[in-house]
Length: 326
Ligand SMILES: Nc1ncnc2c1ncn2[C@@H]1O[C@H](COP(=O)(O)OP(=O)(O)OP(=O)(O)O)[C@@H](O)[C@H]1O
Ligand SMILES: [Mg+2]
Image (cartoon, rainbow, N blue to C red):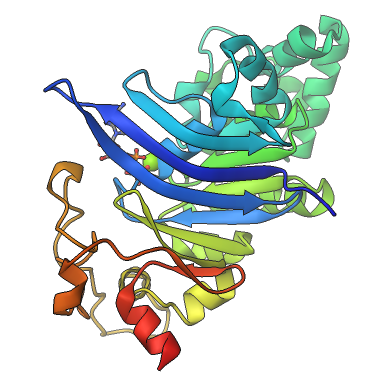
């Protein structure tokens, strides 16, 4: 039997708060990803998408604490010391950030930034690593890769910087790539090109991908499976086509109604009424009950359990379960 590349078991993340206590931010997260699989994570701002990605990279901010297990190829990342984690990070997991400029070193040529990991982690000579950096820049379709490898990040466009970010993450041939809003800062044409590159890498190189986005169109294009988060909870998960065409959770339906449609000129784009509540003031019962159009009295008593309606298709909503069984 093939074992999963990544297995997240009962993960919770807490943040230190001013009064000395700890606020739960993400709760009850379980997920499984096999080699070459693509998982999209969607949800409104503040739902915990970035904290979840950072936890998998072992890059949580100092105020955040995780419980549970994050098994990468069977080894628990949460139980590793920083040195071991450093080796895993980069070698087995690569990360692409939303704003590539903040992730790049302004005082080093982009070629050397790509080469550095190969020298330090793989023991290549600088000369060989620089050659490899140009190959990697070619692979992420950087025009004029040889010349641009000798320039500094500030001289590149946003799209070119993101290509450099992907090349850095790719240099170590990670089995898993985590991309947190990788195209949000880019214009539409460049966004499509960067998604094409990621698509090629998952198809040809068999790399697994976790793609965080608030854009359901991006998720639909790139990811075979989708996980919907709200207020740090899993609201729905399944094959992307099922989640997007027959959503079970009213929250997912709300997200879908907020997506612009090409042929719906004149129709008003709907938003989900209300705002994501602060974690300290979640409503009792279901965390979405104060904004949910389908709310009933029972939704206010007790958090609904995460329930699999069939293998690989889960939901947290008592109304959805009523419908599924009626
Ligand atoms: N370093 C931190 N210190 C305190 N709270 C934090 C920290 N990082 C995140 N949080 C809180 O954790 C929650 C989840 O944040 P996260 O950044 O994961 O959301 P997100 O889903 O990625 O949102 P966005 O779509 O805006 O990127 C938010 O309420 C945020 O305020
Ligand atoms: Mg985020």
